[in-house]
Length: 153
Image (cartoon, rainbow, N blue to C red):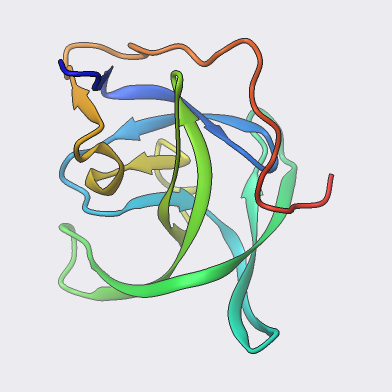
């Protein structure tokens, strides 16, 4: 396996910053990973494009507000429709098992979907192998790292 992380079709996903743990769907068919985000508002800070958005707190009706600089924008074409959608992309720090990484995530309302987080090829590539017969093949460490993105507690 040459140091690659073996993941199942579902994995525990730790989002650094707010310190939230979600069940993420692993999807090798998706190029870019995606996070459920609501109230997405773009703004400018120090001449750069930023976005403010709310993410759901698991097992609660609460939301946590995050702010990130926009990395880029992408056009997403859904397999279920011919129409495309433009989404902002931000970099987020996360963990799956003992693997810690920063990667790009598109922000979109996923409340109608079964999982808050979708992990796509941009994260899987060169790092993870999928065992589609498994779910939760990894375990998050007992002690999770503190925030590195500058969110206020």
